[in-house]
Image 1 (cartoon, rainbow, N blue to C red):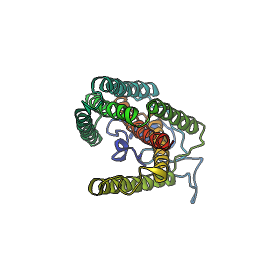
Image 2 (spheres, rainbow, N blue to C red; image 1 turned 180 degrees about the vertical axis):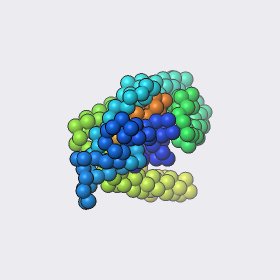
Image 3 (tube, rainbow, N blue to C red; image 1 turned 45 degrees about the vertical axis):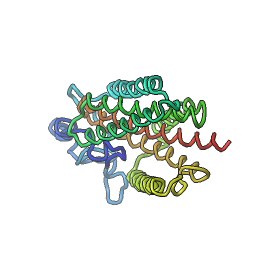
Image 4 (cartoon, one colour; image 1 turned 135 degrees about the horizontal axis):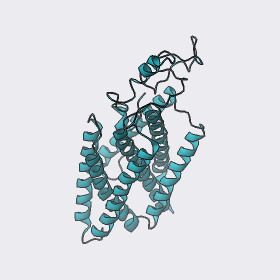
Length: 296
């Protein structure tokens, strides 16, 4: 099972020197044979296989702590995520201050924002297809993403809804905290069916947004109206919900990476993936709140 996050959709955490060989270590040590679970045997048992664990591991098998150093921990993930998000926030603040969106500088600011967004997208794709995490590449992506977010946030706050940026930030934090609590309490269970539903919904959502963008470019206005009025509110809510689902998938991927002893450098991939998801949620929250306040 892979997360819907672009970082995790191509592959899971590294297995060449990571946790793939863990079951063999347990077998050699006299533990249960690899791929067996005494608590979830029998045909038809839905918990007989674990789609998130390395190949050959059973779904119900409790993860064992790997007896080796240099493995990823939750502290590593938190630290790298803080560094990556901190870079996004810092460059967003600087771009807000240094690239004002007043009429005299509007064209320049928008041009820089579009260029930064394209660079960030290319860097994200490069990292997504690399075999190993590149901290410098991830932080560079975060810097360009911050420039884009800073200019867009400034424009929305200046011309559409004053104060909406702070509300969008608080809303993003609330979604993150809510999903984290729900995941830890096991109110959200990431199953194969959950994964399939989120992937199908995400693909449909992105395709509709692309079609709407094409209609808006060639036909003017808001295209099919998916980003304004009642439909805009509906799709904004759907976008936030999808972002929350992405968070649950990312939490599961990180949890399994820690449980099965992924290498410590993989914490940069976890930070990268979480940053991508939080940026998605923030943009959808910003758009949704802008529509709501604009209607007022």
